[in-house]
Amino acid sequence: LPKSKNLIYTGMDIIRRTKATYPFETVVVAEKGIPANFSKQGYRHIGDVSSIMHEGKEVLLTSLEEPTFTKPLMMMFSADKLEYMAACALNQSHSSLLAVDPRALVMYSTEFMDVTHVKRYAFPNCTEL
Image (cartoon, rainbow, N blue to C red; front, top):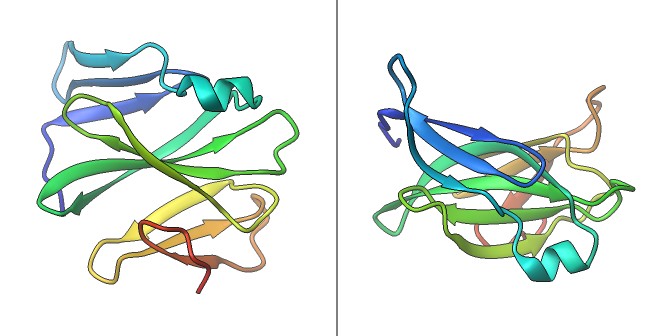
């Protein structure tokens, strides 16, 4: 698992990496975290972040949602520069949670906060399992 000395924060359209110790100085920030092609499609909300080692590099995974919360995507960013790498569609109407098992390369996501079942997807292509 990644052993970062940083904290990652997300906002509506921002990703920020800070030092993990006080005074939490910003290391790098992606002010426009949502790529323009997704913004044009109405995507407006970057979800919580998970971190995974993939092909020898630490990457960040987050869900991306539009205002109706009906077409969630999974996005992947480089952890060092917070650069967009890839995205794929999740086969569900909402993504309140996105976590990943780095050993099995399986992502887990739930539709809503009152969880009754968990969906499983192959990483990094989002094929439902």
